[in-house]
Image (cartoon, rainbow, N blue to C red; front, side, top):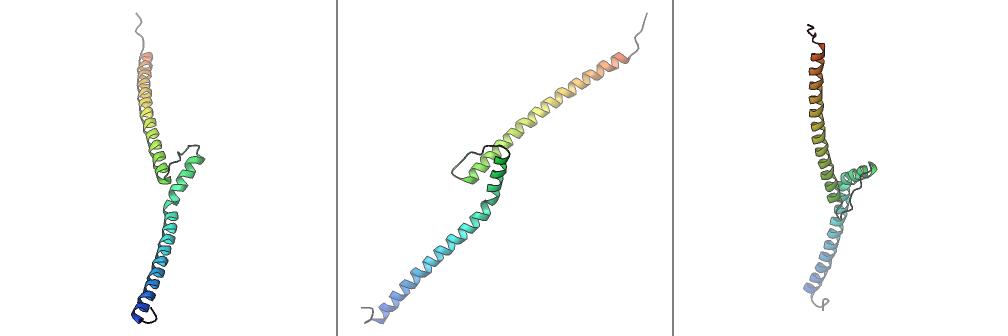
Length: 114
């Protein structure tokens, strides 16, 4: 039928060309996505590997990015706790140093003998 009607032959050829272009575009988008995702997620994989080398067990989440973010939040929480503990200990040491200074001053005062 396409042989008898040139318009139909043109539409048939156009349809094939459109399918070929769409398949080519889909393959190009898939290749670009693969390359971009590789470069975009490389820092997350590197952070995860460094955390594992440091002895931190990174939970295996479905999403690698989510696992790194969870580990980051856990580390920040631990650092906040450590900072609070260090501030408390520093205050305790300061109080003890002040007490020792008072004792030293009192010991150095001449004792009035009578």
